[in-house]
Length: 427
Picture 1 (cartoon, rainbow, N blue to C red):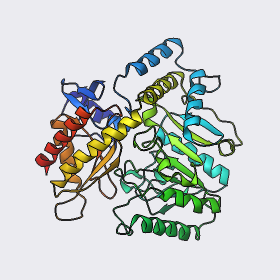
Picture 2: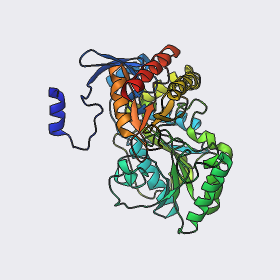
Picture 3: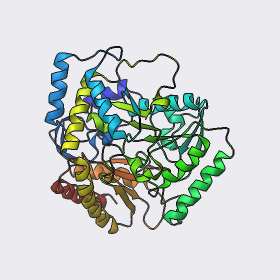
Picture 4: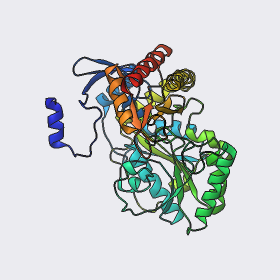
């Protein structure tokens, strides 16, 4: 055990998880690579939990941060803030929500917390519909709507949460149905559930479940849900903390795979927009955003420095068509990983979209999740010079792959080769 690891254990909560038997201290990064304190170089296929979206040490972002920090680091929302207004204008326009208003926070958890506040105040109800296997953050309200036992630390909550089928396509009671019948069954389940409620405030859903193992329903499910929700006046919150900004390749936002019934009423975002700087936020229709009848501010949300980073990062992403790169290179990567998976009985499914890919591991010859195998592959990939993540529903048995969106073809090929070797070595 290193001295830093010992010091970490002495001052940190026991529940503050670290990856690897011998945890890494990352010291610097460049592009799609990072280095540890021992000088080892790694290809980064997890990006600080999908947060280093464009590249490590991106010059455009570091320059914007440095220049803004030299002028003014902090002011709070009590004063006009040009970088905040400029980024809000761009996010509002990109959101697809008409007459949109934007409120910045410091994390995805805080963004979802604010969205729940808006929805419950607007509807006058504390009932929330959430998806099974979901994850929405670590705050008191967010864990109470999280449908993943491993990440929901308490059942005590100010909210009454009701869980809906549909977030996981390949497991559960509807897994054997066709996509069309799957959607129909999930809609029937939602309608039945609403028959037993007294007016829910909102449905919150990740278009692709992140911590849940990069699972997703068939395209169009949330559009079909939206038709039902609209009849009941229930709001739709799309949690885009992991799916936003073009990561899925096919769409800029995850909700656009379910767009036939229009945009969500509320959209939450975070992670990638700051490329490592602490930015989250909520976008909502004006009537929803303005429904609060008490004063509010944010001390750190919309910080001039983080907003400058967000503006530079978003500009880079759009100017270099990183969404298109995620589609092209991500398509190649998932093909390579499916070829790797086809040669292993331990790989149940390789799934995903763009540069958001999951590899679900099971005990060979069964359908039983194998979290020990996932942990072993994580270690073996690190030994090979590749950093990945893990997640999953009933057990943490899914390898999560989400590199920066500037990933090159050569890096995708190299990462797939390392991961194939790690699977063979660990299982």
